[in-house]
Image (cartoon, rainbow, N blue to C red; front, side):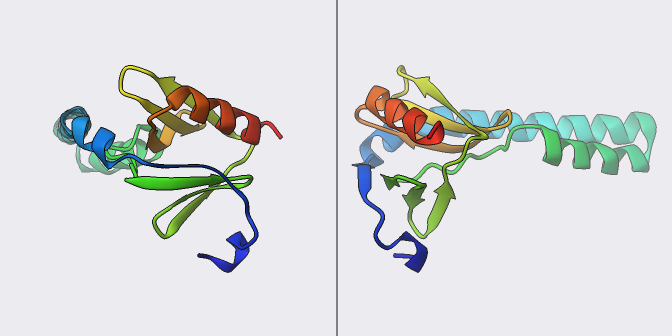
Length: 137
């Protein structure tokens, strides 16, 4: 574990490879759909407005549009300040928003208007409540 995370109390943890496996086709469909949309936007801009528009469209897509793929860990731990997944951490701060999706048993962590982390959970309502409380501290 990272040295800055030592001493952190684990508030919630879950192993969700079963939920992630069950929802894999929805994630794949979203990723493929967004990639196709982005390619069409770039090609149309390049065709209609030239090579400079092609590069500008690419910059706009990477800066403003949702990511084609959202990190989705198989297991994770929630502490008072971080979401720890694999070797990566996400610091919980006031700029984040939490969105609950009960149908797919997941919670999205959103920065501004772009989802940055997707957490499946066997108890998504409890996870959302914990994250909401930690973000607003």
